[in-house]
Length: 65
Image 1 (cartoon, rainbow, N blue to C red):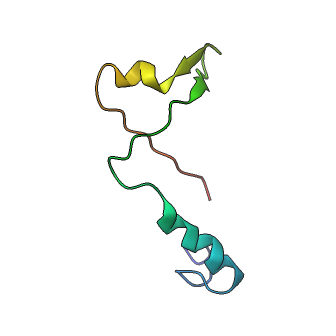
Image 2 (tube, rainbow, N blue to C red):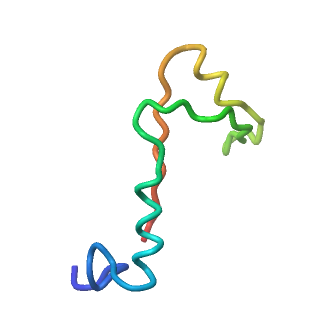
Image 3 (cartoon, rainbow, N blue to C red):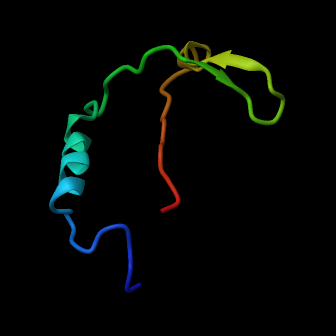
């Protein structure tokens, strides 16, 4: 792969400011706020707290860059 989002990693210049906010992310084990979400298949609303009742919840966020 010759080209990606940044010519340099970690990025430099203006893009470096955006990269620095990555380190302000919550630590592992931090309890997430209860969010109202929508099931993508049914369209029905649900809350994260509904899943917390049954155990640990892993939330993964990413992007196709």
